[in-house]
View 1 (cartoon, rainbow, N blue to C red):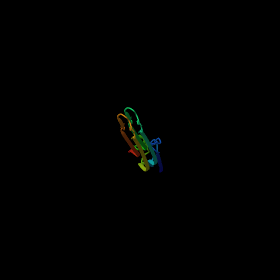
View 2 (view 1 turned 60 degrees about the vertical axis):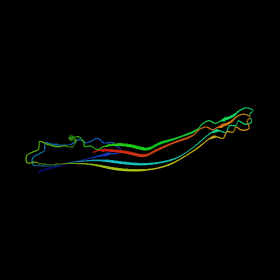
View 3 (view 1 turned 180 degrees about the horizontal axis):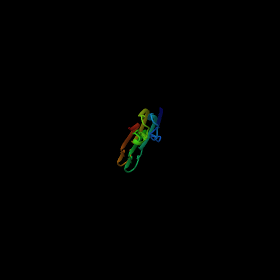
Amino acid sequence: MTKKILTATLGIGMVLAAVVPAFAGINISNTGPNSILDARLNRVKNHIFTLTNTYTLDQTVLSTQTSGGNIANNNTGNGTAVAGNATANNTSQVEANSVNVDANLTADSASDNNVTVNVTGPSSTANAIVDTTRNSTVTVSNSGTVNNTFTSLVTTGGNSASNNTGNGNAIGGDSNVKSFIMTRLNSVIYKISM
């Protein structure tokens, strides 16, 4: 009696969607009589994804706009002091730690999982087992700290039109402050196909 034990083990490791090429299936042929054939095909596909994001933003913005402080005093005619407009525009837009992962753990082609037994001798026994295992381990750790400090000092006016023999006009301008802050941290999109 002839006994043949055939074992094929396949390991596929995938980190960040990198795949090792697959092995072919098992083909058994031309065995003698009274053979006992044990064929096992083990396929293991592991996907290990580890993501660690740490982000710290310390932002300080100081904006100073001054208009005015004009003097039109002691004129023999009319005196006019006009201040312009004072405008402060502060914009902060931050995006950090944005991750998009597409992992493919779909099965290999059918031919890669085949155990083929051809031309065995009389009174032979063939046992074939195919084990396919797909594992996915995902670990995501995100942390973020944002400290935004915006200070805007807008001053207009402070004009003087006094002691004029004619008319005296002191006109201040408009004051405008616009601040826009947008912070987006730790955006993770993870898609796995199995």
